[in-house]
Amino acid sequence: MTDFWASIFNFSDYGQLLALVSNSIIAGAVLGIVGGLIGVFVMQRDMAFAVHGISELSFAGAAAALLFGANVVAGSLVGSLVAATLIGVLGSRARDRNSIIGVLMPFGLGLGILFLALYPGRSGNRFGLLTGQILSVDIPQLGALIAISLVVLVVLLAIWRPLVFDSIDPDVATARGVPARTLSIVFMILLGLMVAVSVQIIGALLVLALLVTPAAAALRVSSSPVLVPVLAMLFGFVSAVGGILLAIGGSLPISPYVTTISFLIYLGCRLVGRINGRRLRRTAVPA
Image 1 (spheres, rainbow, N blue to C red):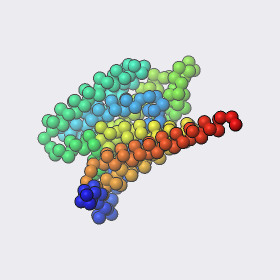
Image 2 (image 1 turned 60 degrees about the vertical axis):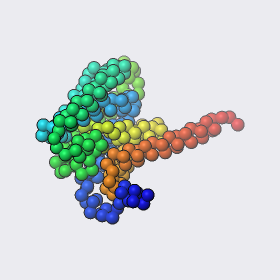
Image 3 (image 1 turned 30 degrees about the vertical axis):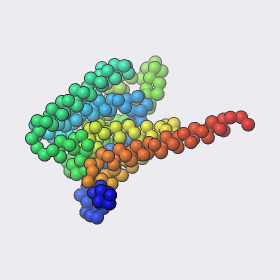
Image 4 (image 1 turned 120 degrees about the horizontal axis):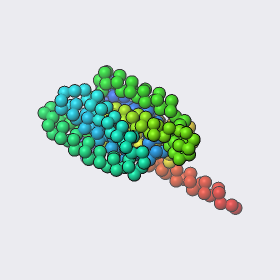
């Protein structure tokens, strides 16, 4: 049993390993913060399913790039943007959106698996597209990741007020002249960009842990329009960076650590939310 745990957690050369993954730590911090922020709108607009759909085509694009010797990040971006644009343009209503996502998901996953099966290179590269690679972030990739995340952040802040309005009450927002269709397409493109860069760290199959779970946890403990985004960014940061720091000393891929931390935060927030709800009900009961 001791040997088993030693194979999962081994911090004997932790300092040296930490220096090797400094790019990944920075990337995880950026993705956790920006991913947590955009995740608030994902939850408000009921689009968690869309994140998974986009990630499948992002995976297919990255796998195609790997097979043909192109830039994997660029391939991931192309796949994500294609999926996001299709969902944004064709899925204006929830029913249409879910149908489109249901069609895209198996197609993207099947296409990605086909490309990986044809890829003659190392199996670690193939596996990393699904579950993430802790040592996969070099200087050019880090620069591209930060640049894309900054673009997402700036555009998200620029459309923040109308997007909040459209997310909370779309019918009233449309009646007040908010360009709901344009906002939907812009938001889907931003979401596609974040999914594409997140796939490089946590993998295509588990990207929900950064773009959905932190925001879902924050909404369990607060409804404040200020506190919820702050908590979501904090939870995303802790999940991503904490997962990387734990994965450094282990033999497992990064994704189990990130998803476990994210899930534990969610469970803790559910518990806090339930306790707070009971207190509110007790104070609301007249003596």
